[in-house]
Amino acid sequence: MVGVTLSLGSLVVVAATSQFGLASSAASLGASLAEGAAQTQVSMVYDAVQPSGTCPAFGGQQEGTSLAVALYDYGSQGFSPAGFVVNSTGYPGTWAEVAPGSLGVYTLALSACAHPSGLTILAYDASGDEVQFGT
Image 1: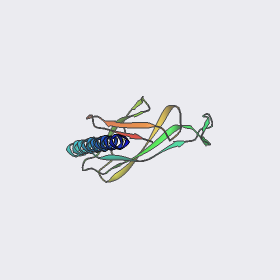
Image 2: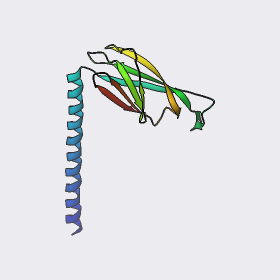
Image 3: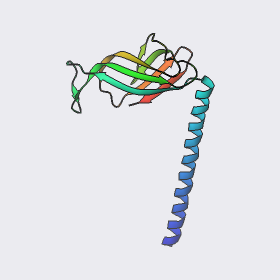
Image 4: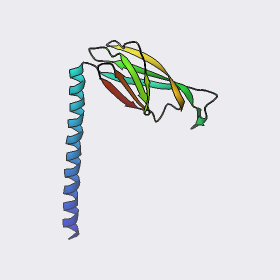
């Protein structure tokens, strides 16, 4: 009886793992197809927070209200951010385009103290393309 239970249990685990792999691959393929159609492929290289004496320390490091975000465009079309959203707070504006094959660094004046880890950063352009990163 124990052997039958273990056999059936392992079959369920294998089936669930296989299904998860298929769903993950489909989502990945869907994202790459959308990026290819838009010809805009952007990745975040780094983010950094400039320490500020008016902000508390977190994890032994001083927080700050100035965030630098570096984006690299490895697509065939440039990306011109029309704004950023950092942890649900919008920062619309006009920033220089990241040309294909180049790096753009953007500095945001945050409305509250932050540390560079644990942020959700979304960049969007005027045509509706958007990229989201987690730190």
